[in-house]
Image 1 (spheres, rainbow, N blue to C red):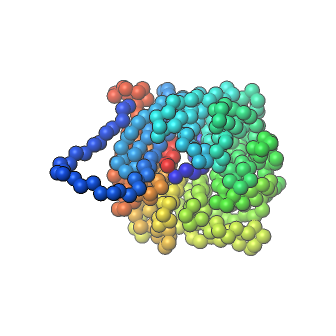
Image 2 (cartoon, helix red, strand yellow):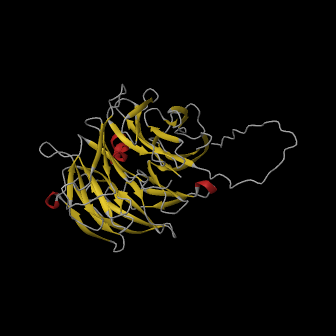
Image 3 (cartoon, rainbow, N blue to C red):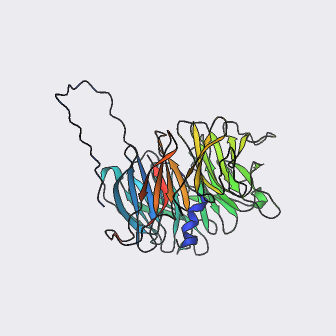
Length: 423
């Protein structure tokens, strides 16, 4: 599954500091097999784990979905922090925060790794694109082009070079792009604004501020499936509660706002059910909205379907920081940093039906599902491994260690998984 997932807690490494393939072949004795006409071969699916390395080159680990097998490890640049595929592309791009570079390669074809240089000091924090001609990189640091603010760098997917760098607000942490207008909405944590970037310019066409309806402390942004709307999660402050601010996909003002739970941190669209999920870390809940019916002029700009309390039915879930819906629309999984587990929620009844305990000291920071809905992957930053949950019975099928901080050193500390993309 290709998707753009850019979230506020990817800034976590900035706060903290920011192989050989396994075969696993099985042989079975057979006698005189009769080969009958076969059907279409199954499409292989993979998960790529981006690993942060505080002592050198980061990496990606490629995991085979069907076999829970570590297929390969590829070295990236220093401070690897985020990964993404452009729309309709097989090329994986990885942002390297401390190296001020982006790595690009074709993982399923074992392609050569290309290093794309950003301006020194850029410190990329996130990247993604809804287009196949460009990859957009969100830079949290200052550089020679933007000496007092962050920026967005545009990488041409045909030349693998930076074609433009545009200044935005202070200390950007996350962004969302509309697949309809292609406008990019970048959340600037440093000045509590949202920059609206038109790649066609390329130019900034507006800045959404409190005077334009934006709530305090924006933290996450998500585009609607049809591209008509951008949903901005704001955490609020001592006087203003948290809210979901709704902006038209080419707009520069907030069209409507609806309340959220306490301390929201993350949002994501369910592409099957067309719902918006928001994790509320402060009150251990998930807000579920019907994204099929957005009407800012209505008294209900976006219908709230449920507020799921994670502490229910005898299960505990505290401090949710990430959500992944299964592509088949049956369940959604919530990773909880406080209780060190994953809550399993029925997407129809909104009931918590299970809680999967993660390894001791897991320190989870990210969760993702894969296209067949058979597996869920959790990046255990604290435990230096990736936990794989099989959805058929909500049990752990494997814990795959991250590579060593020094490749080939068996006694060295391990790298730290920070993000996961699947396809």
